Image 1 (cartoon, helix red, strand yellow):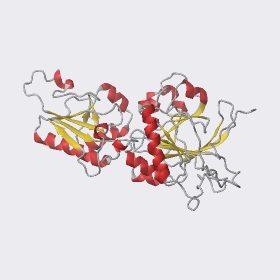
Image 2: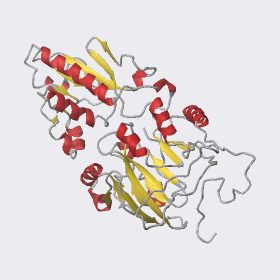
Image 3: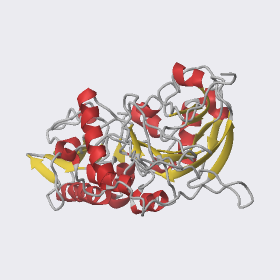
Image 4: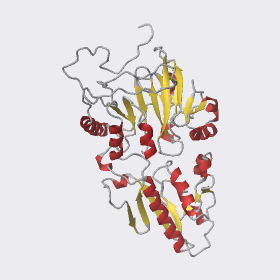
Length: 413
């Protein structure tokens, strides 16, 4: 569950994945990484947004239908496309040019990361993500100094998860063998969250040629995902069910009880529980599924594991020395995540011999390049943000660099 406030101090005038009163009053430009409820807080407010709202083409379809009052504000960004916007902060800070690029997040259909760049700072906001080879290739193109990280599983207890492809293959296998065993057998999917299983539905339909029964409320939410039109159904006679959502149905399907009350041969229900939290401590090579009677648990995650997060942080070195957390459970969780990130950064600390300048985001060969500032020493003491100071005694002749993240002052100060 995202705990990100929506605002980035170094980028005044923009808001990401939060649209409450604070963000609306403080921003004139908005961004949405994906269409899950914890990232859409405030979008249902009937008041119009005070600026454009950028998102992926897939997300734009859902948002325009679900929130018609803000449809005119929606703008689409295709993957890796670079757009330039002049941001005029609402607090009177100095206007500035903002360059934005989207990267694949591979969390759910339409999910993206945002890479922001100005003359002073470069910021990567990951939203929710699960890295794939495509994700890593895209990340190799950028050099952020600040990273807002999906820290959902930034814990050594969540060091390893199987790939989503491997997890999906196992779930398909469990469904296939049960459905083929008897025409009376059905499968109930006990979902880990209200949203996030869209790709699993699509893969089950493609692999088994069976449609998945969902409730009316679920169907309304998924109705605007074209890729799910053939995968989902309101027919309670379907053999695969996700209609109970995050509630375990047990040995009987509530959706069938009224229609089949006269029958004495109740269907045999195999329940499959895809989830990640249950699998703390899983190691590479371990079995990632288990069975208790006719309840089958399968490790399935749409968020990055601890090892994957470490790989991403290392990939973004030596520039990304400031890591901020999008998900924090409590103060103790924050302290532990700071400790883990500090260890990763310490192991990847750049040396004078290996430091490299950062290639800027190029909008046009004829235009001035941006992002040349090397922000080597980061100090940021606000809660929920990790800071690192790589100061040393030899600092003569370095006045052209700043020791702190650049802060814009209100006009007239």
